Structures are given as C-alpha cells and as structure tokens.
Image (cartoon, rainbow, N blue to C red; front, top):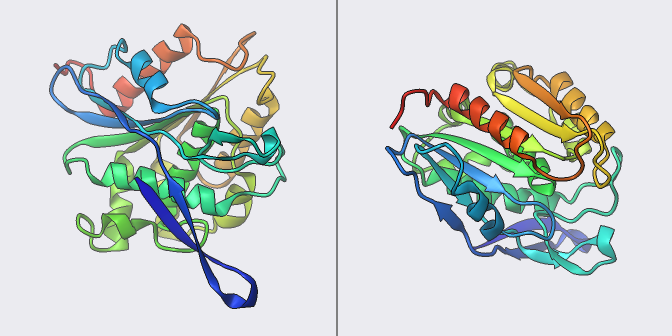
Length: 271
C-alpha cells in the first residue's frame, strides 16, 4: 500500500513524496462483527507484534486491524531507517511536524476505515508514535481536512458524498492512546474549527493513558497532550495515569482500555 502527497518545492514546483506501507495484519472477530479498531504500533515496531497480543483480548465482537508503518529515515535516531508513521527530530512541544508523513499515514488510516461496513462502529488505538498518529487522524477527521489543507473526506467519497455527512460519521470514531506526544503544532495552529466541527470534536470519545515513569516519552508530554486536546475542544476525554509504569503497556491498562471500549461501543451482552 502506498500513498503520495503533493508538496511545494523551490520555484513553486510540485513534488511528490511516496510512502510504502508494510503488511496489514487482521484479527478477525470471534463473534458477530460489531466494531473495528485500527491499532497503530510504535516507532520501530510492526503490525504483527500487536496482532499477536490482541488475539487474547476479551473483545469478541471487535475486528482488529494492525497496519505497518513505512520504513523511513528518522532524524531523532540519527537518520537510520525505522518503521515510523512520520519523521520526528526531537521530543518537544515546539518541535517541527512532518506534515507529509502525518498526512500520508492519516490517509492510510482513513482508507482502512472507509472499507468497513456502514453499520460497524470504528475506532483508532495507538501506542507511542502510533498514539500520536491516532490523535492526528481523529483530529483530521473531525475537522474534515489534513494538515496541508486538503479535504480529509476524499477517501470517503463513495460512502459519504458531502463534508457534512462525513462529519456525522465522527460520532462512531473512538480513540484510545498510550505513551504519546501530540504533533503539538497540529493542535495549536491547525485546529480552528467551525461551530459545526466544534460540536463533533466535543462529542468524540478519547482515552489517553500514560505511565508516570516513562523514560522515553516523559509523563509531562501526556499531560501536555491532554491539555492541548481539551483546549482544542475535545472535551469527552479521559486521561489515565499509571503510577510507576514506564514506556510499555501493562495488563491493568489493557483491561481498562477493553472496559472503556466495551462501554463506549455498546458491546455489553454482544456475542
């Protein structure tokens, strides 16, 4: 799977940067297909790792889709190639954002969501860089545009003919993330919502989890992310901290995520 995004180069020439995404791993529902969650892995990981973990989750009516990010040079890691949803040069609230990478990965997620049946609720879950990507995707969908200004609902044209119809679909998006730092300029500079979009961002359910002893993505960035989202209008947000937990997922967190999803997706009693 590949995506290209236009960028303006010197002399106003349009350049195209192509991103090749890896294999998509799918965990099929063990019961009736009620919901679909896109699970986005962290930096240097792949979809296979998460699909193996998800097989044992108590969510029998949920289809889990685990894509693999493109392999690309990552500035933070000396320019060496890693699987990454976007490039990152520093862990900072004010660091520059790789809009091309963010938009290409958001387009990948949008394409996966658009293939799901219209009666199936959908959501996005991410860890580490995948968590940042999940929130960026939810933001782009809620606002109806990518960071470069292009309409987000392009890939939904066959199912949703107008922006308003695409916005109505946001009520079926659920977002959970852990150990993350937002593309901060996206939140501060790109979220200039209309009144209609504001209503939908306010109703979008979001769960953010972060360990207080995370030595990779410091806990303060989880707090910054939660604050930035709240200020931006994402008021239906739950921020969970895990005392003494580092940069990893623990059973307690996964149990609480499953309980949160079960409640938000209306899965109680489903078989």
